[in-house]
Length: 273
Image 1 (cartoon, rainbow, N blue to C red):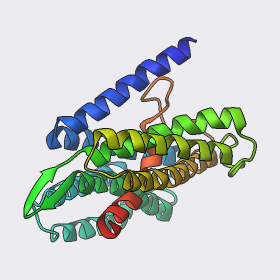
Image 2: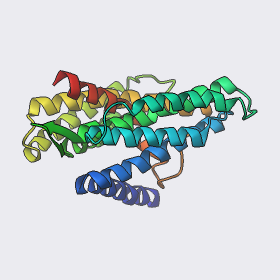
Image 3: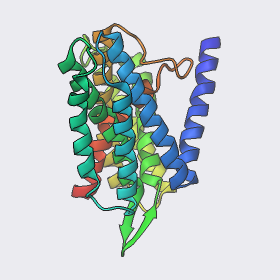
């Protein structure tokens, strides 16, 4: 009971800080997610170290922060696309720097350093393009789609847990996640669609059909993101990515669904809608 109480308190605090920072404005959003992306990336590198590898933690973190900051400025139309060329040059510094480190597994260290930014920093950075939009040459900050993205993840997780415990028999990939079931996935999709309908009553600029499609995409990609992180942790032999939140594990555990959902939602929002 005490563990449930602790988990509930930290969960409410997490949701409050996250949604509050997003809704306050673009500056608080940028500061929060810049910090979150760095912390989640550091957790990933720590997992790599636990597996016996030596990723370049600080060069990787610096690269990640630059990617996020430039993405924020680009989404806000403060800069043009050209500064991203410098990121390509920084990527090539990583294999050169590995020469002087004298660590085992140099190829794996280079690959994991770069992959960490692909896996974590880029999805976080793409969130910038969901909160900024241009209309008639005027760039505005709109948090509604991003808030909806997180609501769908939370609704899906809750529904998957409730339906999975009650009806779950057919496992999706048991060797990776023994508790995830197809029944839970369908239950998560159901609760996410209900959340989509409720959100259209609040965010009236979006039609239910659009929100329902986004919800289904989030359920599918979020489940895959959860499975990917479970695969990584299982290969290392750890239960949680860290101990940031009592009762919840690390921040990577809290954002694993977003890591695959964010790029897909960005693609759909940018090119198909």
